[in-house]
Amino acid sequence: MNVQGFETAPHAVDVGSTATVELTSLGTPAAATLVTAGITNGGTIAVAFGSGGDRTLTGSLTNSGSVTIDKSLSFDGPSATWLNQGTTVIGDGQALELRSGQ
Image (cartoon, rainbow, N blue to C red; front, side):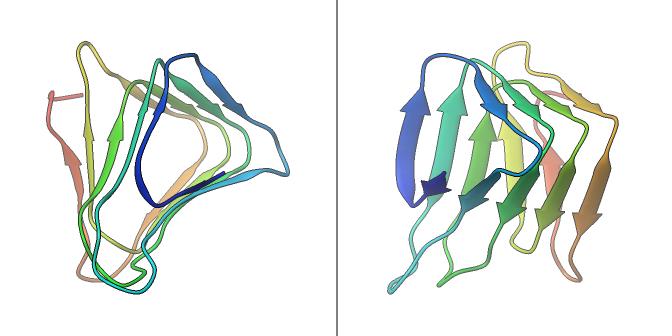
């Protein structure tokens, strides 16, 4: 799944062991936002710099795969939790903002 712009998945998203979700932008700086009821990640979530713009993930995340943050990421949502049982790598000069205090 490649997210460029604003995408809503009202149901839970299951990222299989060989799947990738990428939040990015191409061409001009643009925000990439994924709003979901929850993500179970056994594969890869890549937050790419692309051509710039904000990156946001809204909804709970259970990660047993890998999350790579090469562009600062805001994580938020009502009662959202980030359960990390895998790998999270934050690139130099980038940040993971947990707005709801997860």
